[in-house]
Image (cartoon, rainbow, N blue to C red; front, side):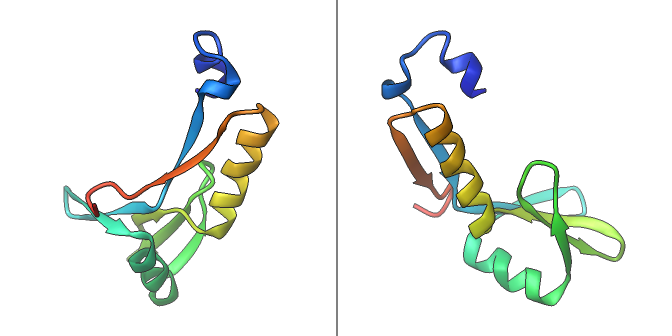
Amino acid sequence: NIVYALKFFKAKQLYLGIPYYGYVWKGKRKIAISRRYGIYLAKKYKTGRHSSGTIFIKRNNQYYGFFPDAETVKRLKALAKKYSLKGTAYWRLGFE
């Protein structure tokens, strides 16, 4: 997405958004969770790193949720630096 955006904007015009929220699924319902709650769930259930860079939570051998951790944030900040973007910005969807 960064490479695509750079076709239309200068690097110094772009901030890379870093999510401070995640999602869990209860049946077919998706619920937004805070990063803090994601960390709590990660201590309670089996976790691993998803190919997206986020942490996944497994419960009953099924994916239950995804959220960013400190490593996710570090990787996204490195991307912003690699492409010489103006900076990064955190957002917490639904937790304003």
